[in-house]
Length: 180
Picture 1 (spheres, one colour):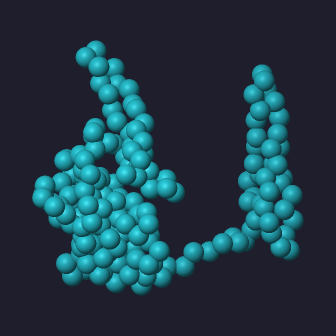
Picture 2 (cartoon, helix red, strand yellow):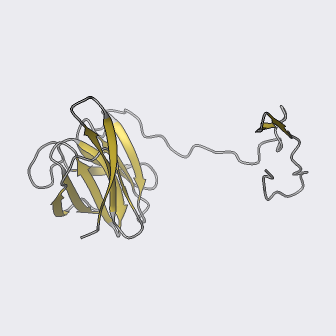
Picture 3 (cartoon, rainbow, N blue to C red):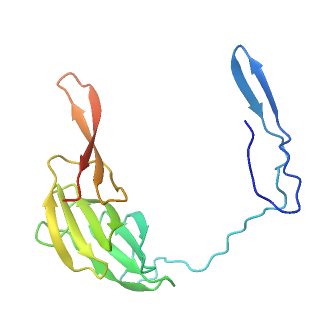
């Protein structure tokens, strides 16, 4: 094990020890960090909080940053997606609770691919596709209820399903839906 870090002006030699006991490799890191003082500091730019201006979160779940620099936040209890610009200003809300077109019952996951927001509603087993401004483009039904959704670089949808047999045993399946 030899960690690699690109640093300037610091000794980047790892000071830990490696030993083997009963066939198990033991790594001990030193108490003093290798890089001190911190080489990365994060500075707060803005906070989106409960200010009573109509864009409060009830139960935020996922954050997705789009190419337009807008932040999309899924609120699974309100079944909608709140949109903020690159400075954290509220722009609007996409969707609402319900089962009709553009409505999201049981919103559980969102992701973005090719400037489309894909929202999965577990309550109605449906994928809803919105443009980045919130206009509904299309919907597609899922064959099974997914517990988690992720897109790959081609827009294919991956999700997990839970299978319970009659004996109380639970297993999981990974399902891939192609982008069509």
